[in-house]
Image (cartoon, rainbow, N blue to C red; front, top):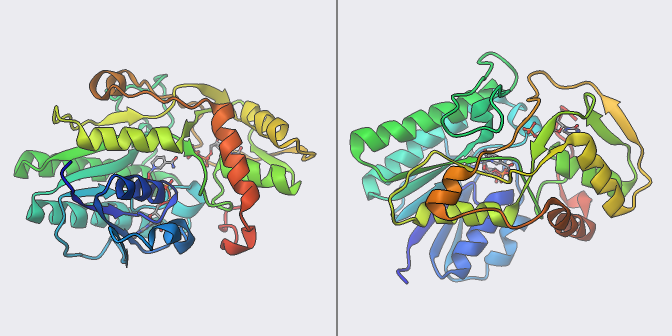
Length: 323
Ligand code: NAD
Ligand code: UDP
């Protein structure tokens, strides 16, 4: 195997830290870059003893000069409460971050992967969502800083590919959960598990009939690595997610049952522009990457709940303002 120098921007986050772990254990020389806006050093502390792992505190909106063979760009707040905390910064992180990472890739002739999102489809009126669907995003809404930022980043990636022949990859990631989610990030899985364990009420926004399709972290990261490493030079965009679709009420019930929780369900107002339904069409990932998720929701929730039971929530910064 060829040992590669790999930069993971946003590498201390929920997904990034597990990606770093996978790349380090495959023997690569891994540089994790993060400004710790939504993550803790705790996520990568177990890697600090590895001689092929390095941690850099840096903001992706600023230029960075490194010599690398591959770049995974995951640097961006991902939870609605996190990305709406400072929406202008979120847009800068998506756009300037993409420009800085693409600039580095161009200089080093490195291969570069963008962690895009199902949010590029907005509140979709095509269901399930194939990559050919152009989306229904409100460009002036509360989610636009993230959705439009990620859309702009995809455009930048494609233009660097067309203008500079850069080897790019674009993954459209659908809702992913698992160990190391921030317990106060406000995302539905982390909220419900935390609430169920601590006995707080489970907060369903709206009537709970809206749907999401939840992918377990390990499956997702496996999809990202396959996309980066595929030898067909397949660039995407490609959906990576689990097509098993659940209503938010069904998710709440599964978590309450698994935790054996006494928490009651309470209903809260639905945030603006909250997508009514979401489910990836993964035909393309299946065909080109021979990828499909292997972990069922109940199995993935079990592992995630077990992890949540081991952590000290005091170690995590308090809830974001929205929640
Ligand atoms: P996360 O918040 O745990 O990770 C993001 C990481 O980026 C954090 O460590 C954060 O500190 C870092 N970061 C944020 N702004 C930065 C900046 N300006 N400079 C440097 N680092 C910065 O979220 P995650 O769920 O691990 O998401 C990782 C990536 O995957 C994000 O780009 C996100 O948009 C994308 N994604 C995730 C999901 C999901 O369901 N988890 C879905 C779609 C897309
Ligand atoms: N949600 C909820 N209760 C919560 C947090 C979220 O009902 O405590 C809902 C939210 O309104 C949305 C879905 O769960 O319909 C998924 O929310 P999340 O923030 O995890 O991700 P999104 O897919 O909306 O970006």
